[in-house]
Image (tube, rainbow, N blue to C red; front, top):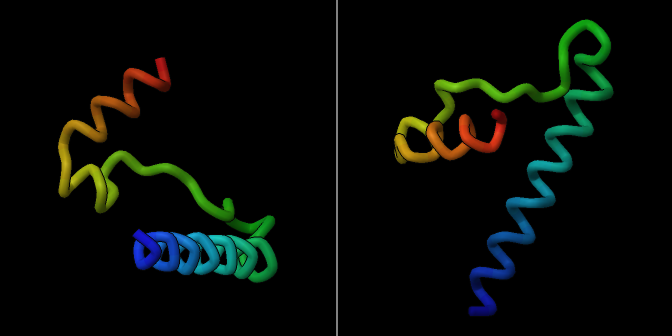
Length: 57
């Protein structure tokens, strides 16, 4: 259980660091992060796209 918490913490830190990098170097010319329907998670699990569509409507 502890191993999962470490992996999730590292993933969260990498995601936040990447977002900050995008804000500093890409914004305002491009959005920092946007949702795309053809993302990796939707490709792996098609029900993810349906769930996001339900939440968005």
